[in-house]
Amino acid sequence: MELSPQEIDAIFLSIKVSIWSVVFSLLPAIYIAYILSRKKFWGRQALNVLVHIPLILPPVVTGYLLLILFSRTGLIGRFLDTYFGITVAFHWFGAVLAAAIMSFPLMVRAFRLGFENVDPKLEVAAYSLGANRFIIFLTITLPLVISALITGAVLGFAKSMGEFGATITFVSNIPGKTQTIPSAIFEFLQLPGNNFMTIRLVCLSLLISIVALYISEVLASRLSQREQRE
Amino acid sequence: MSISVNIDKIIGEFYLKTKFNADIGITAIFGPSGAGKSTLVNLIAGLVKPDTGYIKILNEVIFESQQKINVPVNKRGIGFVFQDARLFPHMKVVSNLKYSNRFGRKGHLRSFTEIVEVLNLGHILHRLPGNLSGGEKQRVAIGRALLSNPKILILDEPLTGLDEGLKAEVIPYLEFLRDNFKIPILYISHSQSEVVRLSDRIVVLEKGRILEQGKTLQILSSFSVAKKLGLRDLSSFVEAKVSKHAPDGITELDFAGSKLFLPKLDTPLGRNVRLRILAKDITLAIDKPQKISALNILKGEVVEIILGSGPGAIIGIKVGKHKLITRITQRSLNAMDLKHGKTCFAFLKSVSVAAADIII
Image (cartoon, rainbow over all chains, first blue to last red):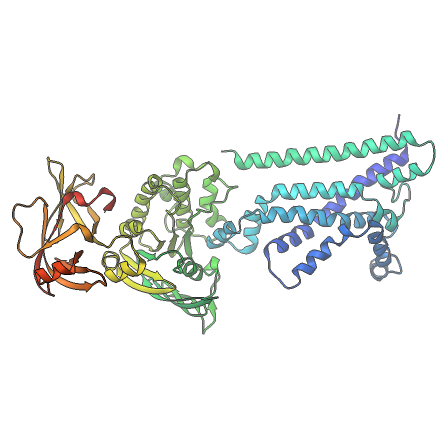
């Protein structure tokens, strides 16, 4: 029961897209979660709403908006094409973009919960010891939110693995190029006699998600044990 | 002066206006909750910006409203010990202690080894703060502040929240700090006994204003301060020196040129202790009483008479350089014909000075 090349491509593409999606979202998500939880600034609520838009819009709408912006004639797409020769629509990197945007609100929410659990008084203590804001963030705040960061990243990874609507709308469903596991399942479902392949892929995607969750749990518990060890 | 503060700040309905100086040793900032102690700390620390005025530390201006000088918190050189210790939970004690030299102010007031020894932290260096007792946490916090090369220390209610046992464990370290480190310390507290025991000078805050400032024992013995602060029992605070432990269980103390006799104290000879004497425990007489059970008879002079609105009166008696205050009825006052400058005898039962009032 060997996997067909199409299935193997879909699996690797899904993993690749999900990893890149998390990598690209990580720093902006940390930054936005931090300022949303700590800073009072004009337009804070607007930023909050903006971040959450992908969560409330139908994914197909998000995909369509991406298509308008990033297609070769779109506002951003034309710019990227003219100056950098990059096309993201119908390209695997477009799938990364779609997955990143869809998983961004989930990551921000998880990170934000973490930051809100760090007592700002500890940061004040570090400030009084002479450290500057950036060093305080690196040495106090970040280590104290590490489990929230892992949780958020895994959530982002899982969401990216499962992202379907925006991806298929934005980059279509080209086997070996832009076809992720969900879009492959969708394709198999369209044709009769593919029940076995469908179930196989479903099981595989389940397995990948469980393994990712397991790794994150182990990491988080190791880190929190290190915190409590004498 | 090592610390010079003259600032105004309005926060909503609250108006804080303070002007005081502090020098080497412990200066207590004392007042009930809501007096503005925390606000004052935040202003000096640089967490809140004063509206007008200046703050100087060792001749360096760290805030000046007109010249727009406002040195940020991390550059002010103030070591802090907070009520809740605020140790970094993810770092071992040793990393907490070294935090400043790694990531903040470099330099030493005293070496790491010395601080660890003085505060007796050697055996807990590799523990995480979560596994420390309240007293140990505060000692680490004191050590961490001292290792941040501070010009001054601010101890913000460091003993509030500790039970009596833990307080007794931490206080000797604070005394050692006061007596051996030549550094100005502001000690924020609402506890009369802590302030009496630790500080030489006091700034009494009430509703954002300075009510009184000066020598701690003098200020706290003042009737007006006691009344304004609503201190539960009007008392005199005096200092006496342990001179003899008699075999019958009485400890003799030198006080204002004469002797005080108290039930046995566990204090070594030659040590100074501070006593709180309740006004209602002192009885007055015009002639030296004979054959009386009270052991302590002190000759003094009437220096203050305050008539209460009821039948009572407060009498201040000067004994040597100390002032004792006593509360009697106006009827006794008239019967004895007490006037300013009149000589009288104050007597006090030894057992009246309860152990809790002896602040070693």
